[in-house]
Length: 347
Image (cartoon, rainbow, N blue to C red; front, side, top):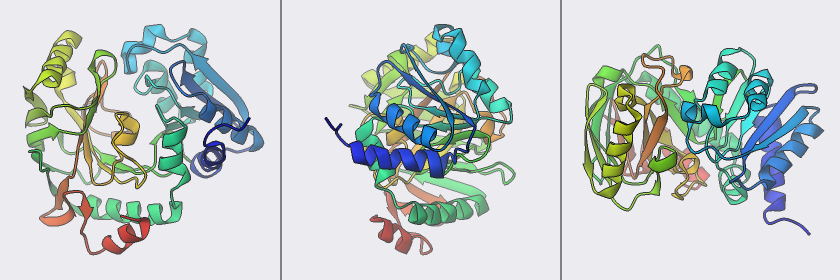
């Protein structure tokens, strides 16, 4: 009996293996997935990797109760060894191995190409990968990166109350999530992220989409906004209702002052993404922005680095100014060099 979305997932698996990861004959491919995930996409990706000539392992394991290093002691030793021994690692975990110790080893080995697709079930893979026109998407994202890299001062606002400004460091990379064809960390298409000059980040960030911190800080779609007051790149005040109180208590329990550091900012530009409560998809909702705090991955080539874990929140319908020029207005692309491409994409 055919599976639901079988053809679409097969198409997405081909894109993931042959276009994003560009798996070559003889390469070691590991696909990690925990027990709370839809297994069907892992199976289809494994088939595509096998057909491409890869040496494939699907690592299905019990679900940790947190992200990053908080999950280290819950992972099998065999998995910890297998991950940094791979040429290609595709992560489908619901509770991410991203920012864990085996992830750090894999990212430091100069070999492993890592593609993070954490939590994507068959419907999301259909929306966010199978239905995309990758040529148009690449053209659009490349232009956004070019414009952002030129900007020195950036301001982001939202109708919910976000008003935050910061400066860029020209030497730092801007990640353009399209492909995973070189060693290092890569993520689902439709996100552009970077680390601003940390001490220059000031203002208010209001998460009004969703929030993801793993375990007891996994809120999904927010019932009430969470308001963060930011001074010189640090969270100095958290306001709101029940979610804000839970976040404040969670951070206190972690007992790691580095968790209050803002680690990165990202644009969301995946035309298939909808606010669903899954961070991997929510971060890519068209016209949103996302701020992560805590652990700062080495791919950002920035100043912070380690922390016990990482958390992310979504700011909907963002307006973005690059050196005073409007790029996006309340979620709609308005820049003259991007409007027609966005229209062709369907946005």
